[in-house]
Length: 172
Image (cartoon, rainbow, N blue to C red):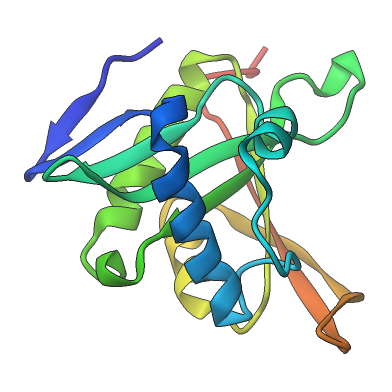
């Protein structure tokens, strides 16, 4: 497991239970955009904790305040898919466009590979062009579009599927 790292006064660190209120606030900001998730409300800590893998729960901090977070969800309960995970990454409104997402994504990729993950995937609304650019800059490729996969506030939405295969894990 990697230790926290500091990059340009932004500290990349492992998420702790005490970070939850700030993580939840950032998630709520994402929900408010209408282009970050199908969720319409943030879960409580217990629900979130059950949903996300225990490994690779990361935060970006500035002056001690959480300004972004990333975590992994399992893609399947099958043992064969143990090294594949779905990525969630969120930034506070004030952090967008400052390169923090790029740093957090790099840290997550490094941490995920250290924990044996060979494939990361993301499903992103096509309107969320900033998130798609972030993923592509980190080596994710578009593998398809799930058309009208779900409704958000009564409107059918597409989801772009992106995937990144590690060049160091699962190469045998």
